[in-house]
Amino acid sequence: MNKAQATQFMTVLYRDVMSRFALDKLDQYFTSNYLQTTNGQQLNYSQVKQHLANLQQNLDHLVFSYFHDVVFDEATQTITVAYQLTATQHNGHQALAEVISIFTFTNDKLSRCHELIIPLMQDDRSFIDLATK
View: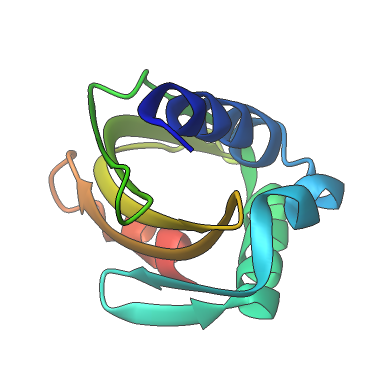
């Protein structure tokens, strides 16, 4: 995979899974042994599926900025993306965060993610709680 292919993959993934909550498409993007570490909390693939289902139940929508930084290492098949995220809960509460994620590809699917989510609104712990549970 090259940088353009990896960036396109991530763009489509975020549109399908994160914005549209198309949970039936997860297997086309993630390996079965996918591991994700968000703010120090590790989730395996089945826990990530549950986490996404929880987001779907608790949010009206997620809005992602375009990736404002993308770094791709072809040798290690890792892509680092940085973007802003706005989450709107059913009660109308909105939260804004900066996200930096490093993903590893294995056989053209994601096998690992290490990310940091930083709330941009003062004292907004609810977003971090939602993002890591």
